[in-house]
Image (cartoon, rainbow, N blue to C red; front, side, top):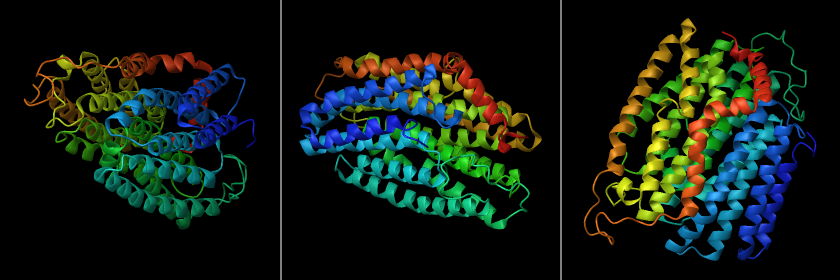
Amino acid sequence: MNLLTVWPLGLVVLATLLLLISPLSAVRGIVIATILALTGSLILLWLGLWHVPDMLDWWFYGVVTSLSVWGLWYSLPYIALESSQHHWSSRMQRSYWVLLLGFITSLIGISLIPNYLLLWVLVEAATLTSVFLTGIPGQTRSTEAAWKYLIVTEVGGFVALVGTVLILSGTGRAFNVFSYHPGVVAVSLPPSNAVLFGALMALIGYATKAGLSPFHTWLPDAHSEAPAPVSALLSGLKLSGALIVAYRLLLLTSPRIAATDIRFGWILLGLLSLIISAAFMVYQTDLKRLWAYSSIEHMGLISLGFGFGGIALIGAILHIWTHAVTKTLLFHNAGTVRLLYRTSQIETGAKNLLERTPWTGSLLVLGATAITGLPPFAPFWSEWLILTGGFQHSFSRLPAIIAALALIAVFSGIAWRLPRWLWLPGPTGLPLPLHQRIREPWSLIIPTAALGVLVISGGLLIPWIFAAPWHHLMVQLAGSPVTQP
């Protein structure tokens, strides 16, 4: 690791420090400068003028940076309206921006720092910053959600740390080696129960951070109470980042334990997540909580892709992008609904969206259609690769069938619930007449609509635009022990 590799990390840290000492009036300028710097780093990465440790880092950095730019862009109008509606103090507004940039810093670090222990530290940093962001509104429900998030995931963090130490020590890795591939692993070492135990602990610990079932209990409350841009980054980036760290770590164990032991854990957690999310989605009446359970479902799909291996692993890596961009659209859209209707609950007035707020309602239709995996939207292609990979091998055909049935149940649940937001007439007694249009601020609609373009085209265009790096990423994944059938 060197400074040339992590320079974007330094820029975001500098922006965070500037926010701490600058007047509140300077926030907009600092945030816009950060957006431009992150966008510039993506261009340099695309042109090959700057390199990251390996191609999986290249992929995840592109996902993190792209959606962080959108999160910052959307946060500018969102926080202005949120703080006006709920009378946020200057201190609360400053805290939001400092914590948000701290959150983004930790996510970028996950994609740039090639050290297993430091990756654990960065996942912890992402957890803590997002915990404080969840509780920043200061209301009873948000505070309770933040505490639940903290307690459950910190238990998982401790388990992940113990598992990491057992894996590193049991596979001959030095803790101070800043490389994924230092070449010090003795492949001829005999099977190790200690490494197997460490692998199970690491998988469980990071599964808790990623919200996989049955360790998901913190996730619906945290997603529904956090500010919308935070929910988007939490769902689209932090959850999948924890899974990537777990995947990298468990690759180390292949010389010491059987690959089937790793596969079974990924597949079991993936199936549980799909089944539990499908069971709960049909009962949701809050838009943000609905998409929270959807996040559990999609982390389950990524987990299945890691477990199935082969072409399913390629689908899982692609799904990190397709889920992130679609779920960012949906959480930003839910934030817009909450601002315009003062709620995202069906019972308290978030109804008849297509008639009263046609842009917001239409974007909800687009995002919901895409997230269910219908063609031709981006998530369809990655889900298809994951299921196809599952059907290719005899050991994974039954799990693939169960996953397909669970996806049908998820589709049915969303199709059943969504019309209640879109067409159900609103209650009487609202400040506005029943069918009167609500003004939709373009500052909120434009960044969400731009995400809609990526949802429609991104599943196919992204691998094509980045053809050479995508090819190198596929070659890297094909050489991983977990990808072998």
